[in-house]
Image (cartoon, rainbow over all chains, first blue to last red; front, side, top):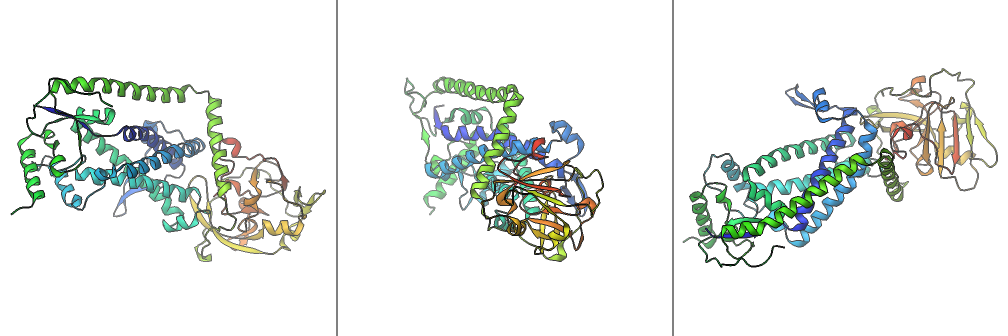
Length: 233
Length: 283
């Protein structure tokens, strides 16, 4: 069957995607170094504590030293890199037109559950899609909004007097800290699903995030020239 | 009669249904007229050959970058890393102070919302002191002489009360009602006409605990020399007879049992700043 090389992700997108991985990782790790000093959150159901953030084994397993000062040093260093990477990505996606393939379209909400059912092997056919399917459009847009949310809630905790209006808008200092924490949990949940999906989608899809190109089937049996033309950018 | 897009969606469904997932995901965008960038058709061998070099290059560059970052961080001398992180605190302080506006106030709360506050640190308060013997030494404020103020002198200054949120650097907070003297009122009463030095050093009588403040934060209208907390005189463990209370900085800066205040142009030492915390710690 004839193949195309399809350009999937631009060089800029790929760099910023991969840069974000260690940056967000460091933000979460250093955030946990800060959180333990006042580890007050838990998952509750009808007043019953299902899970306390976090049990001792968790800190041990992740090698989180009880070092608030070091956590703050790292957090307030990497925050710049994380934020700058995020701002450049948003600006780039906006101005390059890449956002078109990324943001949900009106029918995305309706079709996203079909994608999920398909992925769960409960429905055979997959709704039509562009570069991203509708579940991806929602997830990838949400994760960017969450990134913006982390910067905003972070600022509200960092400067609650100079930015008192922002802190109040988020429900006050205590709520802002709670929101900042749950956004982090959201990233971890996203990451888990993302990894599973990437593994299932396979090598070709993964490679497209590294090279920018994916080998795709031609729509019909197109004539194939004897010489593949051109070099990849 | 179906419109075009409906036909296309049906085509896609057929196409998707005819192929085993995940292959069925391919080739749908062009049917929906979404822009795609496709190469000329080629055989699978040609496609694989073309992809080989960029794949190798991608992994090499990515791997090298990851390794460089990891090893760079690992092998960076402890001193260099500390300098980098301290430098970042100082850079952040510069940004904060450049954007600082003394007219921005921390929210104040109803008196009834005030609650008890936990005693979290007793550094500098190892010995008990005699309140009758206590005096506050202030240097660098009035020209050419040190001041020694009694509690009577302090109480003679205008009394200010505020109910603000006390924030510990550990991450907890509590609303507390404070009463005392605005630091700026004390300066107005005892200071000269000259421009104030850039920093203030404040220490306990035994120098066991000491903090540094930038002058603009200590002169903020919500920075108090407090002698009452939640409607009662300060207890010894909360800093009697006089402490700093301010929503401008974390609790580590709100020193208890003040013995000495010094205006200075040199950045003062700071107890927790020397333990790796942000010297500025400003809100």
